[in-house]
Amino acid sequence: MKVRLLILSALFALAFNTPVLSAKRFIIDSHMHSGGNQQWVNDMVRIYREHNAMACVLTSMRDLELIKKAAEDYPDVFIPYGRVRPDDPNAIREIEEFHKAGFVGMKFHSPEKNWDDPKYHQLYRMCEHLGLVMIFHTGISSRGIGHRPSLGSSMRMRPGYLDLIARMCPRAVIQGAHFGNPWYEEAAEVCRWSPNLFFDITGSTLHKLIKLNDLQRFSKILWWQAGEGEETAHTLKGGPDAFEHIVFGTDERPSGLIGNIERFQKFIDANNVPEATREKMWGLTMARILDIDPETHRFRHPRPFPPGTHYAFDPDKFGVK
Figure (cartoon, rainbow, N blue to C red):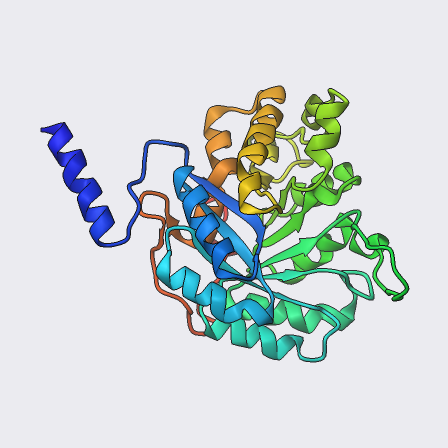
């Protein structure tokens, strides 16, 4: 009987273009950039379905239609995020356009001023009003070598600048990319007091610490537990635990998923992260933030929400079990 049900399930999946989800760990890649063509979309579907994974795809305006269609055709894989240049005078309009197209997050990179500069506050307020997750590059930034000058600087993207944004936009969920590499302690202490602030550990960090055999250093940086808030005024009462502020991401091509899974597994093993917390880090935290059902890989409610009606983080429900 079980074999017959499995066969029928597979036939149904093929007929209606839906995946057969295995018992594999549920994964959300919280940091993936659009590849810009249909072959990349096909690679995403093949590789991410194989690993029971979805991806938050950071999309420039030129790829809006491509990723919008991909999210419509393969909603079990693609979670559409926009990407705008914070100093572009059209940034506000582009954010609105992404929202109307059903995108649920927004990526910012390479500001000409510090992340918390008042110049950008209107952008952040807009994202909070639209219920969009905000993801910021934090820490060291790669660069090309050429004759064209740039006003970007890694120093303008220190993780500490997210502190003001998390406090100024209390109903927004904020994600710092790369855990502020190399300012890990700064990133940790900022998120310790902000339950709406999370970090991924993409980029060179895990490569570096695996090479140095120093992955366990994060146990000293992410040191607190939610329960300590019941006993001391120096930890936020009600949590989350320190490692719950970390979410999985790749920031690589689709083929990089496997290597990133292996490195992330080494990271959580080296720091003896409890099993329940691991599942949150792999995907359940992002599923909760984005209102996604891990069983079906679908949004529980269709997007876009009307402006001002959806909040990724509700302070009124903080601490409510």
